[in-house]
Image (tube, one colour):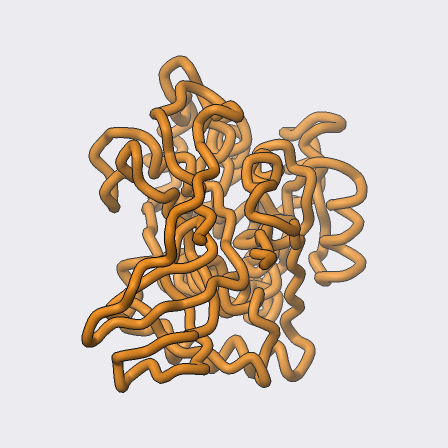
Length: 332
């Protein structure tokens, strides 16, 4: 049998425990050209909240009654597809379930001997690609510039800050709680960290960024985005990757009230969706793997066991009760 988390309704605000229903269905048979993949790990990402809304976006919403969409990594255990033979480990959109049948489109093979499987849905997967292309292609940092990143202890933000350091920038991370801020400085090598839960954000930004902000990588939105906009330099670049502070709103999304700073500073604010860079994933993965091997880049995964615990694990995305990439381990 195949355990699946099925979307039962479109949530308003923070999803509750009845948003999904854990169901068991027979494992489907494969046809010519298909493979059966046993999923080992499931990626939990803030974007999943947006995929549940029935609104126009960069990707179709998950339909009520369907398996919850998620990135996954697993092993081919049956194959009628020469490109993905039995025993191949691969990553793709498998969803929150134990098994998936696919024709292989959108799946790519991975090597568990080169890196642990969870890393392929973290630093070497979608979050890592988001950080890499969002910072380097959209943010375009230059050595000596000041880069600020919000959600800095998360899957994307932690990689953004480290890449910015590799590129010779001064990096300030914004995170919630002393432990996370200590982690950014002591383990990841950030130059400074701001605990938005303590003190005054505007004062801290002024102290930590005395020369202003050249690149801001935003994962949070809301009041933090507003505060950083008041500190940007001439020709600054603001990368809009996410707005986790707004995802569970039951009222209108709070947009930036300080947007005229873009005009005054001739700055640029640009949204990025990692799917736009799919053709370049391979080259990015090679460079990032090199950084990992030389110790320039560190990867951290927060693993929760059991598909039955999907809901509790999902809530950690919004409670902040995690460090690094949040992953659900699928048990037999």
